[in-house]
Image (tube, rainbow over all chains, first blue to last red; front, side, top):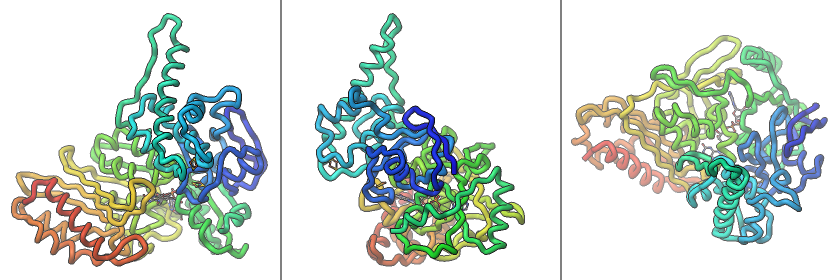
Length: 177
Length: 296
Ligand SMILES: Cc1cc2nc3c(=O)[nH]c(=O)nc-3n(C[C@H](O)[C@H](O)[C@H](O)COP(=O)(O)OP(=O)(O)OC[C@H]3O[C@@H](n4cnc5c(N)ncnc54)[C@H](O)[C@@H]3O)c2cc1C
Ligand code: FES
Ligand code: FES
């Protein structure tokens, strides 16, 4: 079946069996191996990608359901030369150790920050509750997301700073991510 | 692990609900197994866990996740209608849910984690029919109606008449779950949600209680209870409910509550918890609900 979707900002059209998992199509067909498989059953979050902006587990989505939709994998967050704020923060603030959980955590965190520019620690923990990490003990991950939020806000200010007031949009606290 | 079977399965999409009814009817006539795929958060796990299938029993998979008639949330007076393919995350974000049915928002927040909430639906929760289903427990508290449709037409099944035993129901296999309708309690009604699991996220309930009550002058005039993981079906705690409806709040004490809960459920011991612990927690959460209403 011919399936057409936007992937990391580009339109893609592929001919694949529609019941294959999005995770396998990304890794095996499209060679985007940033998205990892841990449990294969929705528990660990290492396969997290954005589907129309929301964090989902790519191991539970079949590719046929992605027709006409927008997908962002970890490769779509930034490039090796230009890391996204969330990626930079994980490097500078120790959010990654062995790294197996990291792509999924980055994508889940990115999804949070797009909806909530200044999340509380509790909101960060809730948004990442579906991502298991065996190494960091989570403190460094939460810290990295906090740092990324500040950097994103600074970037947003510098982009809008040609005369107009700084736009620092905060989402109402308690609003779901 | 049998994910390999997936690529051999047929994947189908239909134009609208009426075409879906026809298609499902035809598949039933021909004896071809089928699956209505919504979020896949139950069904995909089943595929991962089961033994490989013989190729002649591969189901036809029909994607319902994007079907307009199965999606969306609508408030019509005091009736809240939620499409069966509406995702938990949409419920958490919808103003009508936040304002008029905060119990649903609170329940949805406790389903799995954000990735599960971004995919999972009430239709899937009801159809899977697990006694641990958090969504079904919350709908039970509202005495919700389940709107189902097939070639034979549409009907409304009261939640209390849906489940007949462990994962069995009065819904025919070719009846598609279209929506859930809730007659909302008054704005000042009390609602209650308590989920007890091994950890905060990604945990299947050991016990969960959803409850609502309307109180007038010290007397409960509307009450609904739904408890997960304490019986083969979602427990409606009829005797406990009757206690609330028949006795003034200041005359209800812990002893009366315990007696009613004990006669309503006989929870079992399984991998997640023990029968005695479940009964202990069940009584504790009902007492807590009673206290939130102002009982003795
Ligand atoms: C990691 C993880 C955590 C979870 N945590 C929780 C939790 O905390 N609480 C909880 O209650 N559940 C939990 N679940 C289970 C699951 O997410 C829910 O039951 C969810 O509501 C299922 O919805 P779905 O759309 O994903 O169903 P699907 O998997 O798409 O479908 C499930 C079944 O329902 C049928 N179906 C779907 N839609 C319809 C319809 N409209 N009409 C008729 N039949 C239909 C399908 O054919 C299939 O047989 C969890 C699952 C995972 C993987
Ligand atoms: S691999 Fe998808 S959630 Fe673990
Ligand atoms: S860094 Fe090793 S699992 Fe998270």
